[in-house]
Image 1 (cartoon, helix red, strand yellow):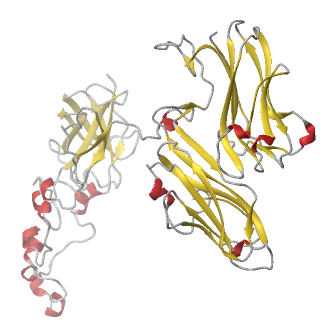
Image 2 (tube, helix red, strand yellow):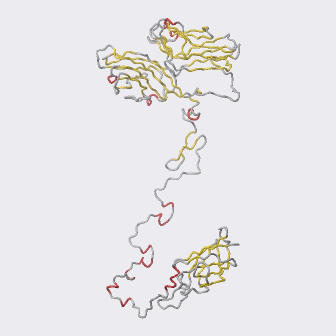
Image 3 (tube, one colour):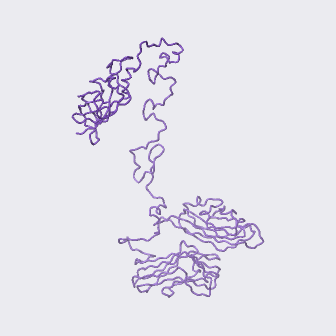
Length: 535
């Protein structure tokens, strides 16, 4: 096996008592410690055991004759490391090191000698033992020195005990150590963090939410928040709905009347509220003079939505959504409660500008709710397998064939031309492919319909299938006791006798003399749908 050796010399020569003939001073040791490692040619430590080694000193790195030789040394090697006192068998003499340079060669067994390594400076203390150039024939002792010289040196008797013992116990004025510095015990530490109490569980139906201050488990019921469906479905499903009821539009604002003008709506029962906001759009010669108040069902103290904090001639805001209200807390008062009932808004312009009316306004109340009985898919629903339903799949009591089409529209349309006759309402059109000849089409139209004026029958709407009217209705069909008629309505009709194939369904509007026939005020609940139901 091929060996390599790396030899490191000790920083001081070990005093083994092998005296050398010196011309001055005490005897100097004739050995020096060497520590090294044996490795294989691959660089791994040599196997544990004993090895026969020869040591040689030279005056040069290569070539030349030996200055000193010590052979047949049996070394014990552990994990590749060995130590040996050079000169143990053949003493090292100052003469050997008199050359000023010495190189150590190492031979393991019968292997060739390994590359020589230089000796460091410390071994030359051997040579210093001869005190070159100095022979002391009458050396002076301490007693021969004057007191002025002796006083510049510290006397052993004057040194503190720790200077000679090195013991911590001999130190004076030592600092007070914490208990842990003396014991080393974890229990003596202070200010350590609380460790979790392991080996316990939360129990059936509970999940770990975190750890309490004392390290015990903080458990909670394994359930989603009421509005968590949106998050877990990546926004594709929701059980949150926004219902909006609009008040009158273009309500005149009396000029200089402190009591202001009031408008009222009746909000339906849509479930428990999560969030409520009020949208107001108005014009005025200076909105800084206005204040807006809101009364909830059975409330005698109003919420102050606005109190002259803006300037200009127009104001458009969603109070409690994108604009904070001046006083009151709608969320705290109505969250988790039913907001159905009569809501009133009061707009006040107390500064008189010599006008009868100064501007006008319109408004609506919106409520966000969380439903426990329905959900909405906000994207396409794709089924790779059959849909199994426990019982018949029905719509309004009628069995569904399974062919359904739906369109949602967002435009606000006004028909103010009585001379136009029946006109198509924009976006309220569906082209539908009927699957069966014996089925019936159900047409549903959900929209916010209104009329300006008290003659409620002046505005009419109808369904038209392939150019033929199949059902009509008017604002008078909706019971609402106010001079201004504006109500969210669902109108449906059944259309039998249509063949299988493509059909076009439209909604048309007729103005019979009203100032305006209104559609699409609330774009959150407007749609036209067509579906096949059983015969």
